[in-house]
Image (cartoon, rainbow, N blue to C red; front, top):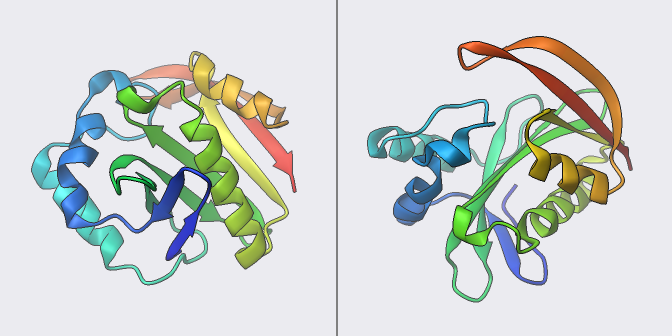
Length: 171
């Protein structure tokens, strides 16, 4: 994925200049609580950004991360990722910096990401996997007409177990 935009946002490749903004949320334990990855330090964050920069396209079955940037300021406020399976299902994830949460940015970014994937990769459905305790993400998915597709109990997660809700949207 090279670039796409919505009314307020640009979804684009992460860049080294994003490091400070990226660390603002990726080093925050509260933000990372329900993420499948741990808090980043600056060395890990820079390596991650450089790895993403080395990708020139969005290959199937590999997580591809994009920055979520404010259109007016070119400020990174989060990132989102997508992985497309051979059957046309897109799995996605999204992280938004605390200062920009509860302002509709996650919803706008997700709608933009899914529209882009549908138009360029012909995806047929999208799936979001959410820890049952992550009420904000559940609310986001249900507001976009995702339906609860599956419940997985006792999933290993960060040293303990959780229950995962799998939400699906047919496109």
